[in-house]
Length: 394
Ligand SMILES: Cc1ncc(COP(=O)(O)O)c(C=O)c1O
Image (cartoon, rainbow, N blue to C red; front, top):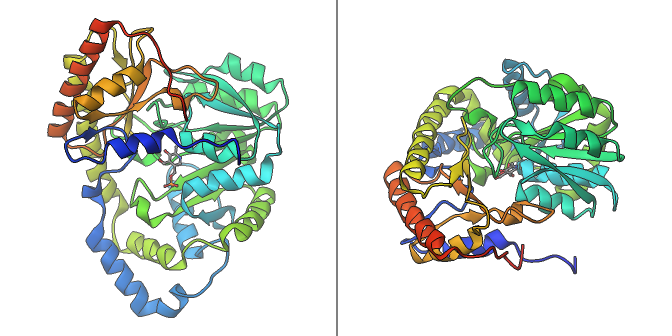
């Protein structure tokens, strides 16, 4: 623990607390879509009908009817897992930690995408593996890089194949097949983290890697982006042998996730149509994403590019080479707009000219104003021709 540093993003989020700042920095869903009334209704029904059970200690695996609902939803998307292959967790973040806990010894090789989700770098990093990286291209990870990593006794690969945080990139069908073909020749675990798959506002859903890798793939899911992150409910889907160990690890961590909240979400899903709810979120996020892309195209100087995701919550911006997003951050804050510089998402360093923008938590009018401000800061920075500097702390 002695070597751990403060989270750089947490430091950034302090800057964004002022109401004058338009923040594209946090990874927050839009609270406008939190089903407050429906959750209130579900809470009161649960307490009225099953109050004593809901307030009691329960099993580590989680509330069976909720696990059945999750299994049914997977089946709709062509993923076949039984309820006993599902463990309810305290957010998918706990899922990452538990998988790290049962699989990783110090020095084990773990492949991450480059860039990768900061929470995974943090959670898996505590088990002191040797991180290796594979470049994330427009259609998914670089398979040749993965092939060379696979030859070195790989233990685990962590990936977000749909609308990745931070880049917004998704794996194409063929890239999934190619990556699976490489991984199938190893004993490595493929940890597929999918909190954003249901937030597709355009295009067609691609198959989970579990289709190709079967039990070699462990899936993580979450209610955070589809219902509410404050509930802290997610899950792990894994084969029987792994599940046994995960249950032991979770029991040691927190006995079980909140039984009240599990019942509330179960009740909410019974009494409401999740797809109707999701379609509202998808329409709004699709519009917000379009507004952000359009404004970036309009107000950013030549040489600035961004990803154009078909879902999720993030865009990834690349500045011209040699232009530092950290320096841009300092100018942007003066313009009252914030984002996350890309460098902390790279475990092996680099990413200095990249940055993450969140589009889910800001409405279209503020996106327009925020990107105008960002464009102004970019123009100023490019005029200065500022050299690359890196943040000192992750
Ligand atoms: C890729 C990814 N995995 C996991 C999480 C954690 O989500 P949860 O709220 O389910 O713990 C996040 C949160 O932003 C995320 O982006």
